Image (cartoon, rainbow, N blue to C red):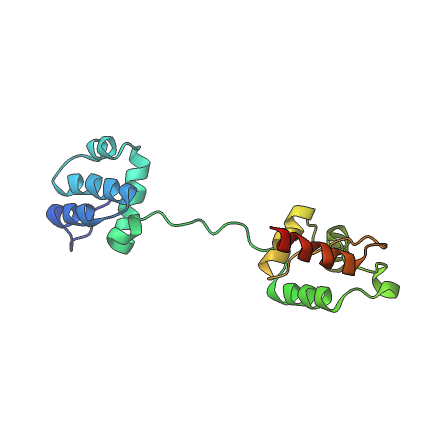
Length: 168
């Protein structure tokens, strides 16, 4: 026994919804369901949609539960964050305050050090790339000061820049 479709829709209404849809896959699904409303078999609807009977059944369930909007592809939720919000806030404050050499064993935070610290404190392992992504999500970025030669002469550099601008 096939699952019945909703009573509040009919073939012309579903076809109109397919026509107005800006989402191609949703329109294809709606057209397959419109064929069922017109009396086509589920096998014929599967051929129209280019899918199997099981997928037609899934579409019918989604359509019955949510209407035409139930047939829109939704973005999958993805993997849950490894650190909760409290841990992320604590990590951000630790990074902003800087390391304490006697406690943390480092004089400045490197990505490797942060990975080790998070693993020791919360038993969550991050790769270096993952830690960089985590820092970006916390609106923190990895910044390194530009190296300066110890014998560089600031006045000579400024004089050179001014001379280059005047001669051009």
